Length: 178
Image (cartoon, rainbow, N blue to C red; front, side, top):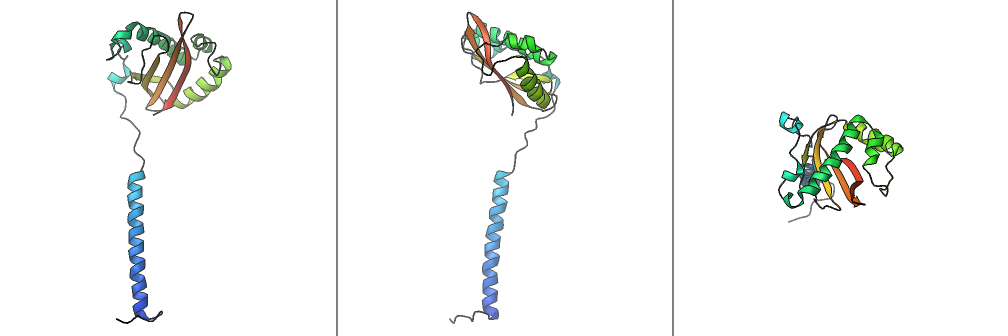
């Protein structure tokens, strides 16, 4: 077998075949990467009447029976926070928080974060469902709800609690995209 000359037609055809194989492998890799990395749709179906109705109390959730009182107390505090959020009432909102909450929850925080960030991005809460991330600890509990909102279909609200002088106070409340 003889080696073709560098610029001969046979050498050019061989080089073209090598390039074609290289391009085919490169395109196959790009397609494979595109399939793996393609973003999944995060939109959920439109809210049904079942989702927009009041959810069952957290005390009825499996695993919450031993801490029923703690769950009921956390839900009551959380409902007052949600009512203040809906009504844009900074004073009622701040009353439910611990004085040691960082950052301190005051009217400025409410205006900038709760109204300026959360309400602007998510809008009104149209439905909620308790998740398995909830912790029914009577002194350091946490409620986590998957929510549907008027501006973004799905989000999550997390409320962390701490018992201070016998009263359950919120130390952190946040809304985030799902």
